[in-house]
Image (tube, rainbow, N blue to C red; front, side, top):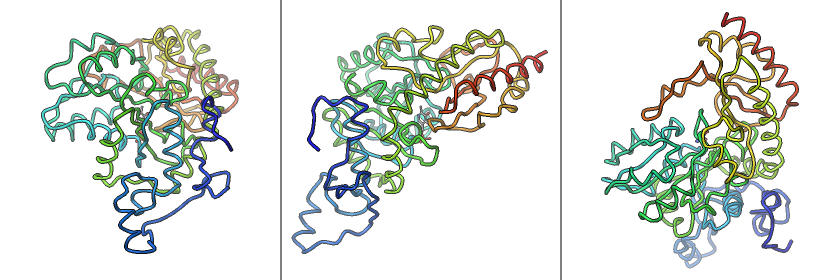
Length: 397
Ligand SMILES: *Cc1c(COP(=O)(O)O)cnc(C)c1O
């Protein structure tokens, strides 16, 4: 196959990373398991040790073509990116990107809507190593400039935010960060590079919980960080020092998932939007927080910057308590009750974002539910939710 520089993203997810020297001509890059690598001679061993690219077999911890292929594919999906490092989970990826960026005495800015374990890493380990965190309103936009102090070193973003889906003005924040010499990091798990190419928008580190849409089948934990220009060496050095490594079998499953991600994401997004719109018209529902709907904070930014919707959103019930919410969720036939998302199956989760927020208002009309819309027929999911809302209304009284 010849390289076509104008390839579109949906074609890239099919082709990227499948170098013949890594696949041996097999369509799906095979699993190369390794710890020891054997050398022909002492000279050969020394040449490998002196080579700092991780595209040469050296020792199992530095990976094999199975991991390199996935990392290269993720890099190709982010136009302008320099390289990608893989991690055993999304949280490990977030931790490594922050450790590659920050030193004792620095301050980090984190949106109040960040994934709770991201907050936990900042207020736990980073604080223990003398790095302060200041939480900010995710809708601050260019106003982030007012929060930057002499010790501020980096701005973390997550767009849309976990549980409440505020869409951040990433280009405005990146512009301020560039002017002030700060590093930017974005948790891009919801959109993936297909719906929001983060590096092309000037972000320095684009982070994915590959556990979600890349893997897509709820059977592997994996994370990645893709570095913008000039940022890969720091990330790689930190990750090598931390001993980070991903099992080749997991990387292989993630590569397999990636090949169908464009079609899966389109279906997740279309179904989620249909269900979100249906919910928005229901009297039992006070608000629907899907970035593609006008009622979601930051919807204008979504309409400007994103290539389409994905399949995760929340809705706020009109009144009722925890027990009424549980009556809705417990009787669902087509939604599992569980953490994580991005697999082919639908999930419903009671969420209470006010428990985690410290700087933004959290008062709402009733309890919240987060839905991950899977690949089932959306008509079945709507009928299921219709019965659920009737149970909720009965329990609410
Ligand atoms: C799930 C998730 C993570 C963490 O990924 P894991 O692979 O579960 O560690 C990070 N960010 C967001 C937005 C997530 O939804």
